[in-house]
Length: 128
Ligand SMILES: [Zn+2]
Image 1 (cartoon, rainbow, N blue to C red):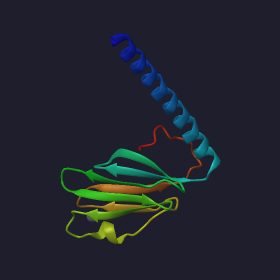
Image 2: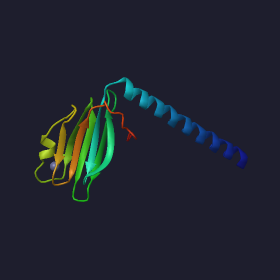
Image 3: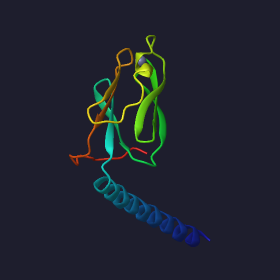
């Protein structure tokens, strides 16, 4: 019984590794093939995430800086702040950005979103 469980575990680990490698290949191939921009998310001047703004990529997440939070949404190759705790709400009014060089700033929460063109291939990770 125990041996079977071990075998199963090993098979599972191998499967996960294979899936990861496939995803990595698929991801990097996707990046070089399609001219997608990258959204860089900074909290308190530190890079906390890199997101590729590709056709089918959708995500929603909240970044909490300790001062406040911003809920960020990614869809249709655009990124924007859906909801924020800051008093001025300026970041939510900055709308959806998608082009190289565009930024969204939330000063009260010390959050910065920056779009970077995909010409330089300095991607080290893709956050899910
Ligand atoms: Zn704000």
